[in-house]
Image 1 (cartoon, rainbow, N blue to C red):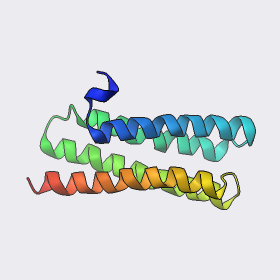
Image 2 (cartoon, rainbow, N blue to C red):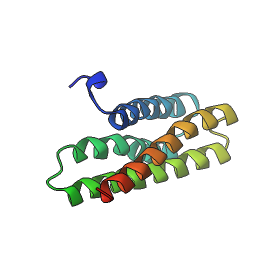
Image 3 (cartoon, rainbow, N blue to C red):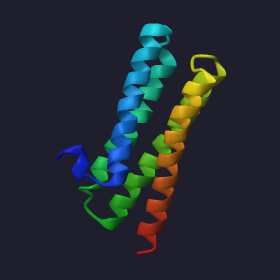
Image 4 (cartoon, rainbow, N blue to C red):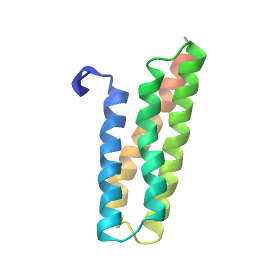
Length: 119
């Protein structure tokens, strides 16, 4: 399915995954950082993968579980971004920009989980 036909959460998480892949590439090529960026790549791309997987959940509880896993991955991603910033691999502007997107995803996932649980 094309990106524009998917839901807002799926689109945002896919776009975020692209940013994470590009950031990881930048960190490896320009900053020669491999350890933290590998962790960032895993958690940052896992957000969207879990959201995509939730679309084919077997039940409502399974759907909620997949969204919670995506939320946990987003929280972990925020941690790695903070660590990269604190260790001067990311400038303030780079960090603030991608952190904003990460926090948006976290807020959307929290809201989605609450809404679905109350249905």
